[in-house]
Image (cartoon, rainbow, N blue to C red; front, side, top):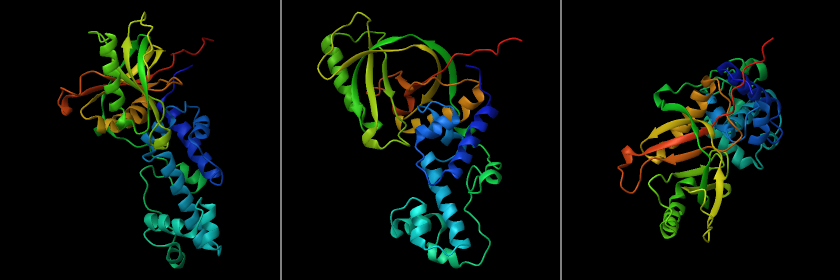
Amino acid sequence: MKTATRSEYLDRIRRVLRFVQAHLDEPLPPDRLAGVASLSVYHFHRVFSGLVGESLSEHVRRMRLERAAGELRRTDRQVVEIALRAGYDAHEPFTRAFRGHFGVPPSVFRRIDEPLAFPSALCGVHFGIDEAVSRFVPLHEDSNMIDVRIETLPTRRLLAIPHHGAYMGIGAAFRRLFQVAEAEKVLLPDTVSLAIFYHDPAVTPVEQLKSHAALSVPPTFRTVPDGCELFFLDGGEFAIGIHRGSYRTLPESYRWLFGQWLPSSGREPRHRAAHEIYVNDPTNTPEAELITHICLPLGPVKQPASV
């Protein structure tokens, strides 16, 4: 795998932006668009939202509403027909969404005798295929910079409890896990507390979110207590983003790491979920002093073959 420059990441996002506009009448799930971008579905959405300034679902919704606005002005199609084409199953939810975006209901917007104009977008992209995408301006969020270092992490054997649902609720799984670990006498000075998050909560319904609360255990540990799982977490090279402060502000650090640092790093992510390592104990550490390592798995660097 060769290295990827920032311009190559931007070209990938432009491909996605063009693809979205050309396929608005089709389902556009994240895995399909990750394939267009040649990025792992584990990381694609965070790269997209970090560069474009809105989530994938927000972008698709906005493109469909902007196309609908043009149809209202240029055609005499019934509003319900335009609503269905925009992905709404009835007149009322379409009207509510359209009013929320353009400030007036579709029937009023249709009668306005002014040139078609759209509310501003951070990325500069509006419905209009190539001409619009050529104005794509990647988002910069330098104010949210975090320290990043690249390290080789070891393979770890983990004692884990699965958690389903909102990620902020994983604390209950950790409390149960520490009780089990104390009973099994596997809490050691070098025990690592970490969580693996398998989905991006910005695009995955909360009821489908899955994660693991985990503690490292010695390779010789074989017991699998009730409700627990035992498995290895592969090591390798990782970009480690150092988040300081409340767990509630972790999404901001994720956005900068994936949307700003990664495209400028010259590296490709591995097709594996990221995980978090908790450096200090939230039960006895002030919230402002909490340190979390966001561990982004990186693919190998391969130089182009010499001629």
